[in-house]
Length: 159
Image 1: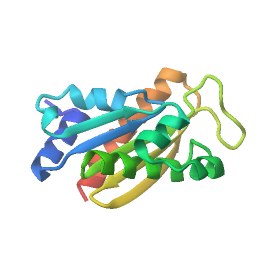
Image 2: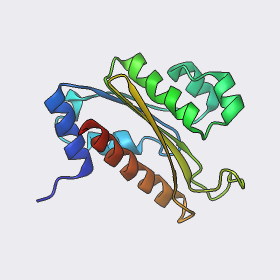
Image 3: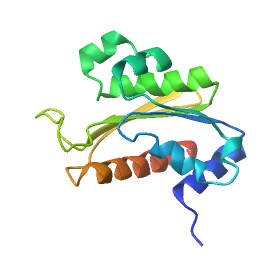
């Protein structure tokens, strides 16, 4: 039987003795929910924030208002601050963050519907990525984003 991405992630974190924290916007807690699907998730999941509002990103994650103003909330600089902030605030070795435009509205020419930015803080190292998932529908963008975040975190932890 194949292990799910979340099972593999929980196993990898358990092997390392590390903890994870999530800072989610457009995914609305789906990443944390997937991790919680796994038995023994409580050994690795410290905390998860759904910071949908900009004010919440600043208050709970330490995202700079200047960063949001300069780059926009859907940007790699913002998700970098989100990932580092959630890891720091929770005392976790791993922080995952996501901010994007799930649709059906809200997109622009420069930031279309389906654009999602990801931040990964892994034991002091920050990695950011941006994906363009197109416009397959709001919940599909959220599901694809969740899969991508889990897969990428697992790959970074395996390096």
